[in-house]
Length: 249
Image (tube, rainbow, N blue to C red; front, side, top):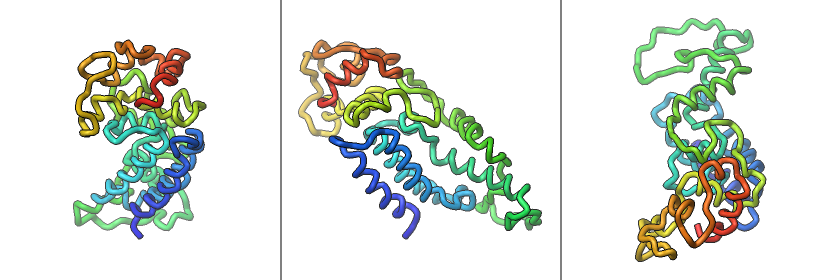
């Protein structure tokens, strides 16, 4: 069984925990995703991380993040990783390679310690020995640095790259999902459902021709409003908005 299939099998367990009605709390889901899906996907990743096939595993890791956050597939990956509080797979693999390089250079027990490498002949072979060496106790800061370089998205409703869940993680599953979809501006609005051909039009009940997430957050007369800052901090205004819209988006 290949790595992608193994991760998919573990994601099935995560999907059960993320049931929309009685789903586990976000912290439990994130911990489970890291313990089951990510640990499997990253096993010995320092060796194969630079393979052209490594990206195939990312699709299942993205699914794991969607189960944690409740985000829909149209949500862009930078926003998905931010709401999950998990660094992008490629960034995590790079960091694993860098820490493995440090072990290879300093740990007498490492099988490749003080090993003399032959001259590389194939450009496609990119061993972890070619990457920057990072001490294991600096892995978290190195990972965050790479994540900030990778993610140049501007969204005031979501926390900047950080390896922890954003505010609102204490909410019930349905409220947590609604909050994250509002933060990413991607939900089951009339506009989205119309694009998916699940509605004949994208009209909002308030009469607006196009019901988007931005519209129901700040303009729609059918419910309360809240700002990006409210969503980011999960204020009372945001929770009032969530209560009104949670069964509709």
